[in-house]
Length: 183
Length: 279
Image (cartoon, rainbow over all chains, first blue to last red; front, side, top):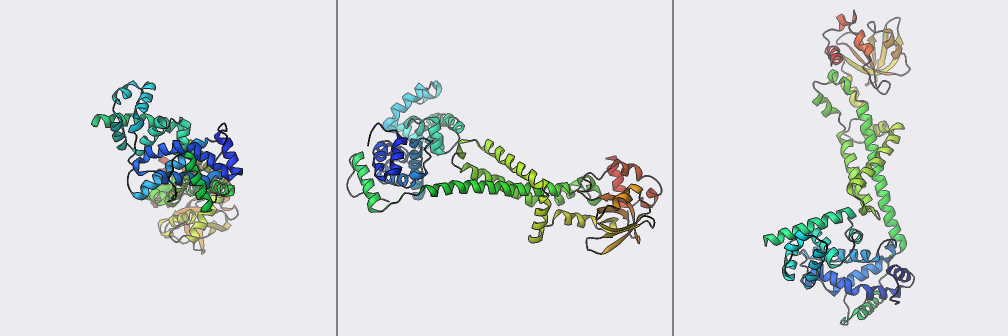
């Protein structure tokens, strides 16, 4: 695989030569593994990641090339994890404490002084608080601050209007702060 | 769950394992057509929902237009009983369900989720209303109302409901199609809803009312004196759509002229008509 290829170019190649799918897997495996671990916790592992890539392989012809491939495959990963935990009838635990320092730094960086001052908490605590958050709020926070996706990409992953992403992010930060205060 | 035989140490091994799995399990990618059909299905369902919603809206408009709310006091004791009897609940419920279905289907089109619910609802309503205007203009609202009445046991079409409300000779109300007029004999014959001929004495009617009665196959509502043979007409009103607003000023003015008032005074629908004039 030529590392200089964009996602769109790589997808175009895969649609002609299926064996090129290997390049997409190599490119997205680390990111998606982290994402699945973040939203699914230790319960979620490589089995789910395999399911994500097989799912992506089967549905690649349906990928709208005018959209971001990254959003598309994140959406598949999101759905696979949600569906997995729904079948298990348990709530995903999530695991966020490994990179919570970065997230806090980003929250500071956004100039949300009131929230960021109150969110000065350790990683494990952040992870515990986020477990109690409304799933949609947790999802937007993870996608925005842990996965560093743009608003439009979050909109495409969660299939919600872009305006709603901003609203949910605002509410998510507020809920995070409220939950932290309660604890 | 897919299992990979060998441990996965890095992305290259993982990718190799995925490719191996695809090959050995003969996993096939869906064709482009499958996705195109999927998109077409949602667009079609959206259009179908909007179309059915438009038919429902057209039927609502027809039912309300033909209900002559201005005359509710003649046929009902209160506006509440009139409204309960007239509001087309079936069509309203169907319309709301279709608006919701159209919204859901539009949201599932390739980029439908990117727009706010409000925008999608407004867009849906705009399309539905536009199609409903065309359907109504083509007279299909009445057609739908009558066809559903033929096939749905408990549903009473608007025109039949109107006949039930207006064909009560014992209360001074008659409705039907004019099949014969003789102004010199001051007699006209209606084909009543039960298809029987119904003789009406028109000696109290004005020349304008006779002109209306002479329109071929015209359907009219008659307020008259109960228990008279033949039935003595006090006022003749057109049935929509011939006259959408049946309360012409001339009726209000003329009905107090003698001898009409003397013979018709005390007849409940006639007195109610008087109240409408002052309303």
